[in-house]
Amino acid sequence: MAFYSEKVMDHFANPRNIGEIKDADGIGEVGNPVCGDMMTFYIKVKDNKIEDVKFKTFGCGAAIAVSSMISEMALGKTVDKVLKITNNDVAKALGGLPPNKLHCSNLGADALHKAIQDYKNKKNNIF
Ligand code: FES
Image (spheres, rainbow, N blue to C red):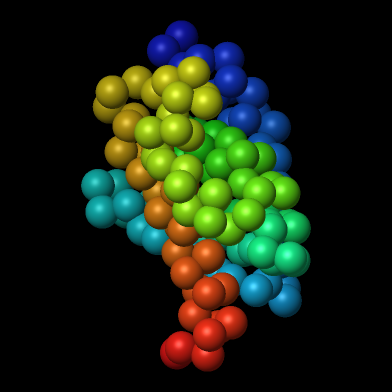
């Protein structure tokens, strides 16, 4: 496990914001085509800011660490700011990921951005 940074190990062992929001304003789910793992994000938005965020990840340790880190990065930020967080930003915030685990970081931002899009569609009544 030496190839994982301390931050990755910390977020994997003690994931933040794990769970589900029953009355979520937006839900985003993505699957990783490389390994078949799944990640779902739930958000509550107030005054255009992420008031609450939760996730469920059926995936590897890196995917869980990525979900946990991006949930912390998003909390309290405006939805437009969160849309600018890239998969690369998350990997960087985790102190890097091993090259063969970089595909795992792709789920995080994609799933969260999808949840924001879902929120925006509902707000604008686009179904
Ligand atoms: Fe599937 Fe990491 S191996 S997300």
